[in-house]
Length: 273
Image (tube, rainbow, N blue to C red; front, side, top):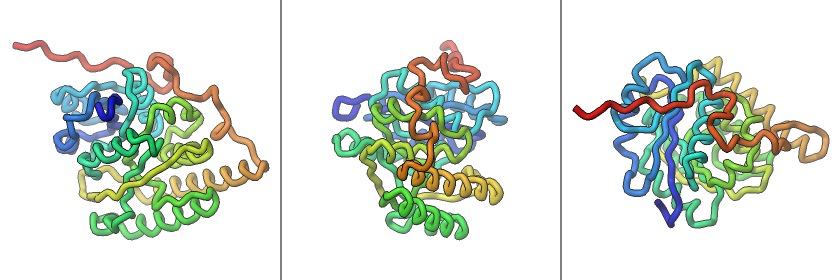
């Protein structure tokens, strides 16, 4: 608990068996009440490692995509009573030790969502971010700030904290099941006028850390541009999309009603010898 609020950490996982244990070891267990991993049909031992660590684990019977994985993560976290949800990649690219600070910013009541920025503090290139990704990050962020009226240092971090209010109100089912889900979710939060905060975060790029290739990066970039342009057109009253106006597309109250969750059962725990 933090300030009397239940804190859950969700881990959207795909082939994270080599890095999951290192990530888990740095999660501040003194304040975290619940850890949930959704395995998006990994082909490695991710679920087995999560089970050994005692993490509440959900397995998708088929790969639904990064966005679909997060939809399952948030649905389960809300159903299990979370007041604050921190989404952390289990690939050890971001520092789990910042969970306390991020959750504290939301618990203070000043922010509805907090993003761990790789750009603040200049840690992105130092941490090994490929230069082309850094340049694309800066250009896309500038474009989105211009069109959406924001002042974020980056829109592309995979380390975020959300209040229950945000996760309950945003029409997340209208978002993509692919990587652009992250960007669309921020756009939705800005559309609804939620207070967004940032915190500087070091990052690490290494062979075992997940990273999309150049082709997928280009597809993601085009999706980001489309999201920003759609946002501006809708603000001007020149467009209409379920992305920003679909109350029926909010997350269901029960994981069983989640259309992308093909299997919604935790792995059975081994009996003590």
